[in-house]
Image (cartoon, rainbow, N blue to C red; front, side):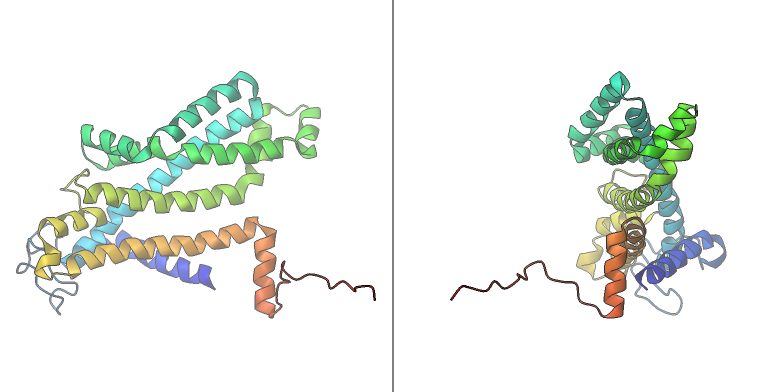
Length: 290
């Protein structure tokens, strides 16, 4: 199943990164070989333009990249949920104010704002987390608000209000669990967004050059003219790591979508059973009068 493939790939990358201190053959910041050495038994993924081991940088870089990405995903999801649930349940001026703030962040061009914030704030993982959280929560807030407004009209919410349950208990016990699949899908998408956005900013030189991440590996490969020199391993390794992580998360996200969408689940079961879905273009023949 695709979700199994996604979980295996993501699990392998997370495990390798988490065990970097144990399995990395060299210090990732120290020159341990010649400049731009190709992959060999001594350096399985070759060396960089500064003589550092690419495999060690890949392992340590994954550790730094993944914890920042998951932190951004957690914070953006929580912030979007708080804003959306508060606006949808309390309505009135609270809804108007929070919707206005959300729309302002949606209208502001994301990339220029990210570049400006990253350029003027001190470089580091905390700055990266703060910048991408500030610019990445608004779409989720709008998505969650529409879902919460739909649930707000259901009978079980009215029943909970009739028995005297508090507002926050209704939000936490009644609304939030029924939004589980939407929240999970958004969280997975935010991890993908965080990894690619972080790598893009670091490739542009807006990250901490001294912090080893997959994005900074691409930055230093570009700085040392790796493509011109033919040192393909210095940019293929981090590029493949980013691509594989995004690919595995996309496979997992498809499974999450199927859980929350019965129509997608039914289509998958029909394909597995070999049943063809009726075409919408087929029309019932009409007999003409003689």
